[in-house]
Amino acid sequence: MSLVLVTGAAGRIGTVLRGGLPERGWALRCLDVVPIADVRPGEEQFVADATDLAAMTDAAQGASAIAHMAGISGESTWPTIRNANIDGTYCALEAARQAGVPRVVLASSNHASGYTERPDGGGLLREADAPPRPDTYYGVSKVTMEALGSLYAERYGLDVVCLRIGSAFPEPTTTRQLSTWLSPDDTVSLVHAALTAPAPGFRVVWGVSDNTRRWWDLTAARELGYEPADDAEVYAEALIEAHGEPDLSDPVHRRVGGEYTTADFDAENFPA
Ligand SMILES: NC(=O)c1ccc[n+]([C@@H]2O[C@H](COP(=O)([O-])OP(=O)(O)OC[C@H]3O[C@@H](n4cnc5c(N)ncnc54)[C@H](O)[C@@H]3O)[C@@H](O)[C@H]2O)c1
Image (cartoon, rainbow, N blue to C red; front, side, top):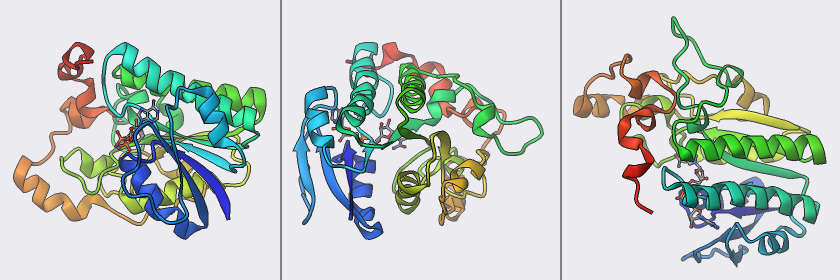
């Protein structure tokens, strides 16, 4: 069994990975700044801050890969974002380098390119056509994550796969998420693919399920071996009945980052 260090293991995605990765042959070492309530048989647990380089390097010893999920998972103040998301990502990559871990999977986000719009005339948006256009300080931290990943891949030869995750929740709860949902099973499938693809080098791929209303191209993720199984469309009738048919001219549906691109998401609205 290969050992993977999962940071942010107590969070939503971390919990999903703890459920699904062992079935795919991974032994889990879990790290989070808060203790995991229900440590499972066979799991190792580290309670540590991802910005503590010594602790991260210690936790990375002997691992085949790091799946770095720890961080602030939405908009916040600049100091909060900078510390957890930017310093934390630096520590994950530097710990991998120092501990000789060859691969790091990074939880990037659609908000790294939040202001990018739907392609004219419909069609699917490739990652290559979605350059850094962060919609928030949170989005800036994901652009920086991808930049740090690129640096560590090019300079130190690490394999670094950045997942631009859409909406990773148990089920979609808004009509936007009919396009952007990443189901729990597909989250496991995507992270497993990113952990096992032969010699990926540096990659940035969208992380969404095979949603009927998806407009982010999955070719690059599929090249890693990702095989999405779910489609948010099964929730469409109920969500449209509750919220109405999506207006595709609304920024919420027109831009990659959805509501994060609106005035409500100014950082000053987010307390420390
Ligand atoms: N859920 C989504 O839809 C989504 C979408 C795009 C990107 N992401 C990214 O995926 C990652 C995981 O998201 P999530 O939904 O599980 O978020 P979450 O908030 O549920 O979990 C994040 C976890 O990270 C831990 N954490 C925060 N700061 C830490 C630190 N300094 N050191 C150690 N642990 C720390 C928290 O305690 C928490 O358990 C985040 O980086 C997030 O930005 C999530």
